Image 1 (tube, helix red, strand yellow):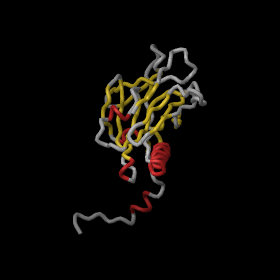
Image 2 (cartoon, rainbow, N blue to C red):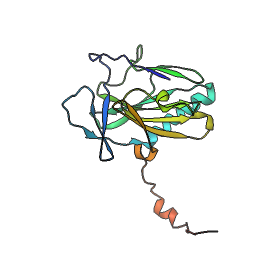
Image 3 (tube, rainbow, N blue to C red):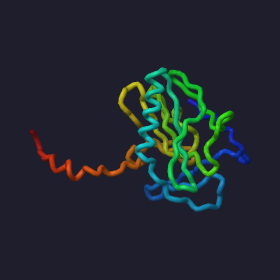
Length: 189
């Protein structure tokens, strides 16, 4: 799996983020802003993860191909944006063109900050399934039917496993209190 990204500094395309961990929390800043302070990272909304996994699941179901979806952080509007980059896909591999050559590229104020990629070989090392750019990354095993997702954080050239709940914003269910009144806890049945 490859992310083709020869993006010169004078490119009109979006920049990237740099991540760093401080006391167990992730902070970021735009890669090109050397003197800028690092800001706290926001979790990726669950609905974007769901849409990404659904699209990759359909790609597998209809064509038996793996691929990827990218996440950008909108520096101006301060929210996450999902996009499917131009890519060549096969049963076990994909190649993304992060330059968006021949296609409309993401807004200049969007910073490349993560991905969801699918794999048909879940035993492959995570580094093969995610881009070589800092961010929150997820790898979906499309061969298992339901969403089977592993999370990773890539920061300063290193990729480390991360729990999906640490990276994803799951809103509270408005019916949680009502439905839990129907549940009785037991030690054994």
